[in-house]
Length: 203
Image 1: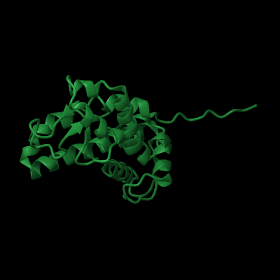
Image 2 (image 1 turned 120 degrees about the horizontal axis):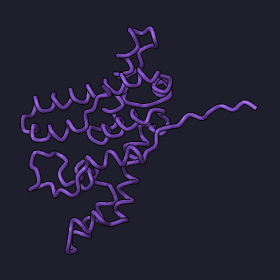
Image 3 (image 1 turned 30 degrees about the vertical axis):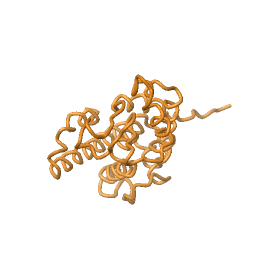
């Protein structure tokens, strides 16, 4: 009996372990860095952007304990909440468990955490369109920041070489966005070294 080999899909845990190394511990949002618009931040979760994250309630409670912020950073309950938050907000929303390439999913996830999930999705869609040889390989797709069956279908049938090109293009777009940010706001230059740690090329 002939059997077909099931394709391996990208796994959240691999991407999460990589990205969490780029995210700091706890920053109070006042004295740590006045140029950071995210304000108070816990494990990369900015309170200004995600005020309804349930972990903030526990963080606030633990602020009154001796040993804060380490007591919060080491809390298994809060760690589970951080883990769930990252999966729901930055992984599931872009359907990354339906992407064949772990490298592409990792890049999408990390860029989503750093720049926003719609930005990551648009980088992917732009890169797909750049690779279509003027529409000879496939028609341009809509760059709407929504990862659906059309985008996934193209990504998952790319050759290994084209997947590498896709990865490189996404990182080039990411680097270009960092340059745009610091050209508009010189104060953001303080972050450029950390941002560039997130830019990677296959070659």
